[in-house]
Length: 511
Image 1 (tube, rainbow, N blue to C red):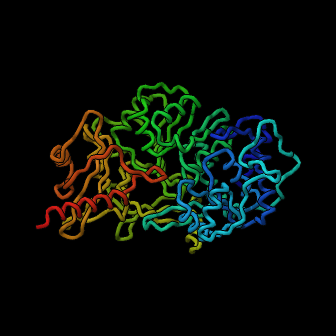
Image 2 (cartoon, rainbow, N blue to C red):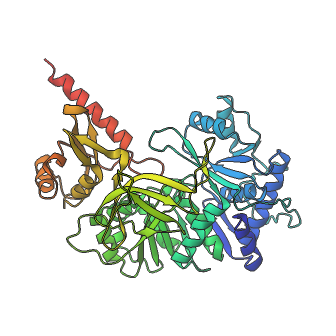
Image 3 (tube, one colour):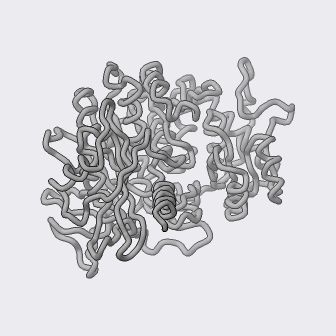
């Protein structure tokens, strides 16, 4: 399936159905279809051709969705860029993927020019009006269609930049077919219906947004864009969920925990919601159990997968035992993929054994932009999982996050799970500071309302469930854990903070 055909097909079937609702208004399928064609013609005038890349540096909006569709109709690939990223970083990415054109705001284009970026830019319609809006009462010319271009299923559709484990930006390249492998599976798993109202919490440069944008398009449902300024406003998110009568919610657990803790989600009835999906990081078992109990009519699904595969596995959450400490499993293979767990000796892991998760199949990326393509559509994730007796997989942690402290292997995710099971802890993250004999474990905790757990409290609690070498050495309290633009815990920042704390303490103690 070619991605832009989804909108065109829905425009033929239900032209007056609402396709996208955003901070800049809304568009029906018919409007979005013609809007995308008009933009495609303007991009053609800038020289964009099949096989090119087009950067989209815009805030989340209906116009940004129309821009994505326009690029695809030319047989080109779109590259959504973080609207909150500084111009210097955007200029670096633009130099990497060398776009034929850029869609952005005039002021952002000016900021890029300071770094030598000289890419043709679309900022207005020929009459000078803002192309990002479909003004009330204006009907775009229905006879102006984008030029017919032959697009293959293996052609590049979009590039999502991720920092990866090294912090260096890498462009994850997905074809129409790799995206469709996920979209078609997700639509069936979610039982998508024309009357559904999907939320879009994730930024467009984050792979979770692929679900939000394209799954509703498969059935003519609507997607409701959460404005950037609302993305981490607890009360704003709950109000959005209720006012838009969302039926399918998909986000990182951090957003849901904020809504629970500070947005009165647990005191709110949400009759419209039928499925709640979370991914991107581990959902601490305590808050998940609480939310699951509060919404017994809602189906909960845990999805797992790096941007390189979009999604690799899925797990429907049933009852959660009161004494469960570990997070729920990440489930079994999804999207037509095969998942294999490989032990350190390169043999397949058996039930009860751990190993690195390797994903092979149709949703695996083409490769990283500017680097060799993947071989046999296979991707080693770098994540360590445990094979459970029932065939489900349990996430253990990142291969590069498994460190040694005083000669013992430490699994930070296990430490975090135990800390999060303490009644006085709402959220927690652990890092290791120092090397060799000086290495030790530092915990950052967000106290639960009305609690202030001490280091001794947390040590005693951890000692009941962890080996001695995994007990934390230091604890710092935070109002909230720092997160990157994708909503994941910013572990690099926490490690840097911990290192600064240690260095400051060493100076104080110095003779």
